[in-house]
Image (cartoon, rainbow over the protein chains, first blue to last red):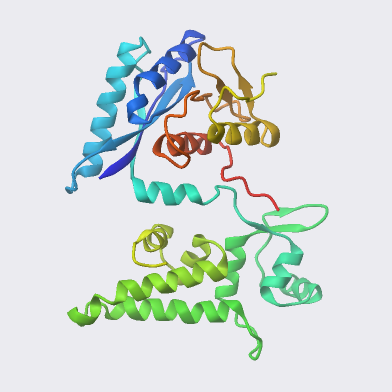
Length: 238
Length: 81
């Protein structure tokens, strides 16, 4: 398995020393074959590098230990201060890559986008807000309130609106119900069970395509984002 | 003030320019042989910028570097309408 391993240290007392930055440059060179990224200064330093391990139960722990050993040896060789480790992390490569594909800036929606997504007029949105049944925006700007997209997705998932209107979320809820039906029955029949992951992956792909982002699909189905990302990363689907 | 230029591999340069032009980061070539990116949030520590294309776009080294940027408050992929 391949892992992206983070090792972060912090100085007990910050030091004012420009040499640390130069030593960190040397550390980046020393760890180049680990495809390492290096940062820090007199307050602490951190390295993220690639480590390969076997597939066993303790692979993540082995990755952290191997990463730390490599970082420690190189840090000593370039004369970098060895400070206490305050954080380590190992993320399996496929999950790591999938997470980085998603922007870390939340999706924001203004009034126009929210009314389009709900299929309602601005007046109706105003009524919903006044009724106290609509979530508060994350920001109240002069031009428009701004909601975080996932907040609106969650509202839509539980919104009991009047029947008869076509609604993206109703359609999404139908697919989410199918996903859970497959999940519930996949262990019932060993022969059919093999088909279910493929069918569930297909549902995830369709939800992401229609909703625009993996995190929205995760919200609608009600599963962790990692599970959606694993579905998207699984081979066999176009 | 320094600006990211041809000394950086293109993948890294694209990210560095976005951070400097639109996200308040500062770029310096004053520390040894490697340029340094300073986060807009001064409580975060600076990041070394590779000057050799150690990997292709989307390769491990580039992704590790982007993860470090995100950990320091930088936004990437940058999303703008």
